[in-house]
Length: 209
Image 1 (cartoon, one colour):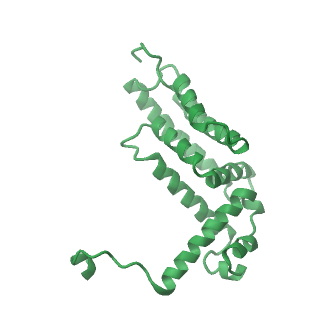
Image 2: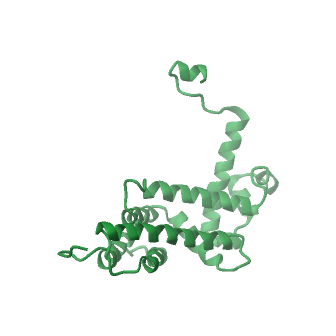
């Protein structure tokens, strides 16, 4: 334990070149998000990102080895924000988490646009994120299926649906609603998702599951 920690004083924040480097790295990620969410991975230019940050392309490559590494960091930070918005699985059901994510995505248009564009691009087997996105949907469906089965046992999810199919439908509905919202921001994503959940997943009132 450091002296500062022993005395109860706050840990010092990084200063000097390291702090400057970290700030510059994050600025690059932020500008990359703006570029990728508009043009996708294919159309995103390192030169444009560097210009927006105020560095040369060579200077940008001091922080990220190539466009793939920069893009991976943008997606990583996006995932962390979504995970934080969803909340602790121990405290929220799958349906509650999904609702929280939809509400969060409405407040972060850039990240939502990025995900919509890149998930479509990634259908190309030659895209650098093809395998990652295929695994992402597959793993998310497997986790959702397990949680839905548990929800059926607890009476929180209708017992006449197939959890494996429903798990895939949740992602499909979320992605479809988000795409419509990106095209027309008068679309109420939260209300539409709640309509889907209420009509398709929740047991009808008056039933005992």
